[in-house]
Length: 570
Ligand code: ATP
Ligand code: MG
Picture 1 (cartoon, rainbow, N blue to C red):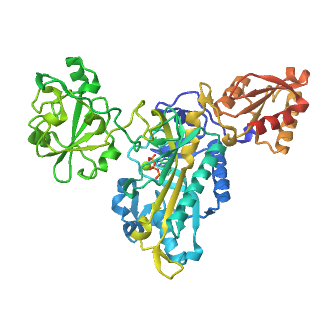
Picture 2: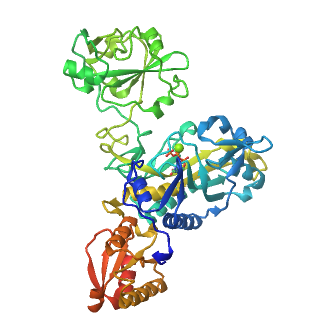
């Protein structure tokens, strides 16, 4: 490709609305342009990257035995009513009516359509197993579209769905996809980790997320360096670090005027956070639910939502309701004497003795509190907090560390959730109708592009992993318009590279060399060859890798073979 005939429209200015590196750099490097909130045009440069990611995904899915197809973007509302998701999906599902007042949705995902297809096409066990996938535009009306391409409203997903006669076969395909996703993200040149994930209402252990590791990631991942344990913090089990010690102190009431937070309390009483507990109040199915956690711990919404007593969706109780039940407002609540509420105590709070908590009287706290002696109401002990670095690993093989990640893939054992809801059955060998065992497998294709940039950039711009760079190599001639020698050599080198199958960009634009260099660095092309009159006089071109940055001279006659070697080594 010749840059003069391509579309490069880089910017120096840092766009004000962009909070994260990938968003800033994708705008500056002219990979994308914003059309509306969470909706972007993929400009030619960005589009080349997207195509490369799609190609790798497609090759590996085909290799794994899945079959590509394309389902409609517009889906009838009735299908969503049949699966029960018309109501369950909430406002992320974009709905509209056609001219006949019939309800439609823009697909956020395709379980309904594929299950409907399986019901009519996969009628016999002889058709099973089957795995269909598509690479296609999705729409989710996200509450907060942000971070550019990372959380868009319109985005491209690879979504695959598999159908099986029994659970064992679903597990086989699930493992096949786990291995396939590992190959895909390795080929994309990303540093990533597969982690156990929440399965929501379906339960069981059948879900993994694939995360690109990056400090800007929205998700926290807990892993154990001493074993292969890794889980999303949403799911990672928190085990209490120690047995509860013997209580020694008498209970005392202390005045704590103006104390609203654990930080206030610890400052006033000169206490470490881990000697205190905090009490959070949520609406329950029958009564309010008081969650008691150690002062330094954070409540985990995913775990809390699964408590039998808690109302769905999770809602904090109002100050009024709290006052009625506890006789005090937020800031002075505690488990001592709490009647008419359900008490759920986190494992680590349960392991405390002689702790400090609110006295259920405004401006008063208790010190020296002990569970058995001071709390008469029945207590449910549960895991309701986020793990933190240094917690014991649930597999007993060391302590946890926390890193941040961007979810780029998700594999899930759906089991018979959709086949039962939509009465999608096949006839087994004995002639009995059975619901399909199903799996689903997603990759955020557009998000993977942005995640790659989050993980690979520096002060000069994007540092694309070679397999997904918009071009593998750029040839930058100094004085292309002025020097016949430079032009002839650059054209010849460009032709030779292209003929050797190298994906090369010749930057023949009439700009100062500084502008060309800055653009090629910003766009993140992995390999650069510079031709100048001076270099050519010495028979050489200058080579520089985007990542390491030390230039070196290469004899012009060896430039093609030298580059082929570099590309093969990457
Ligand atoms: P998230 O928790 O980030 O909202 P999700 O759990 O809703 O993701 P899935 O329904 O599992 O996502 O979709 C499969 C994949 O699609 C995700 O792993 C992610 O890579 C991608 N994806 C989901 N939502 C978006 C979005 N708003 N923008 C870009 N990619 C997305
Ligand atoms: Mg989502």
